[in-house]
Structure formats: C-alpha cells, structure tokens
Length: 147
Image 1 (cartoon, rainbow, N blue to C red):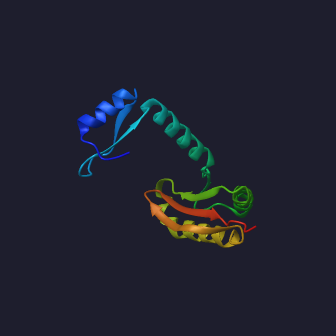
Image 2 (cartoon, one colour):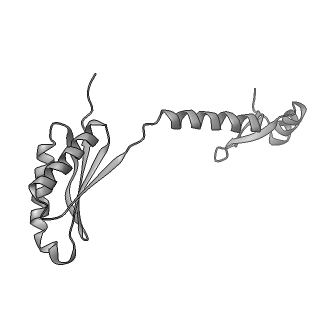
Image 3 (cartoon, rainbow, N blue to C red):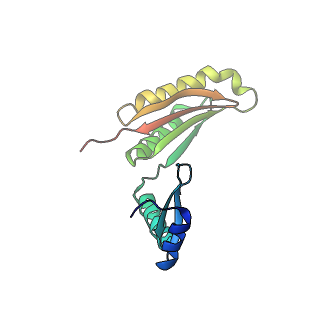
C-alpha cells in the first residue's frame, strides 16, 4: 500500500482484476482504494440491514378528545392511554375543535393537562398542549424502566 499517481493505481487495479474506488474525492490528492466494488456494496447493504433491525421503532398512538368530553368517556380513553404507555408507545393526545367549539379552547387545555397529571407515573410530557389550527395537541413519552 502506497501513494501512486492515478494512472499507476488504475494499472494496479486492472492487474488484480479489481475496481479502483474513489473514497474521498475532496482530499488533495483524492483518496482511492483498490477493491471489489460489488462485494463492497453487498457488505454495506448487509451492515445497513443489520443496523436497521437493531434500531427500535417508535410507535405513536393517538387519542382524540372533544372539548366537552364527559367523565366516563375521559376515564375510558385514559385507560387506553395507560395501556399504550405501558406497552412502550408514545401517546399523542389531542382535542379536536369542531365548528365554533374553538371558544372552549381553555377547556381543551385543562382536559389535556389533567390527562398529563394523571399519567405522570407512567410517562412524561414531551410537548405541552399546543394549539395548531383546530387541534390542540400534546405528546407523552413512556418513562423508561431502569433495570
């Protein structure tokens, strides 16, 4: 292995019946490597696939409320939220304001903050309630259990 001019490097690659691959074109002089390019691509694809398999996939579950959701419905949806957080999924809770119900946006915020407070031991609030158009959205991430 040494430093060769590009013509000599091409000759070496041809002798070995391999490819001359440019590793870093911006270097001065450009860095090239003699290798089997197809094998290199195969190995890289294999590494990428293994990395992708190891990566944890984030699941986001949604729960929709109305600005005047009554207590029974609220409790029912809260139980679902608890299950989602225990399963390790992120929770997107939102209040959808239909028509003129946007005048109750304070009630919607109170509802989401109440949910966040009651789910405090299972998850932490990632994003406080935020009004975006006709939706007020809040994200809750599950607390990681330390083993």
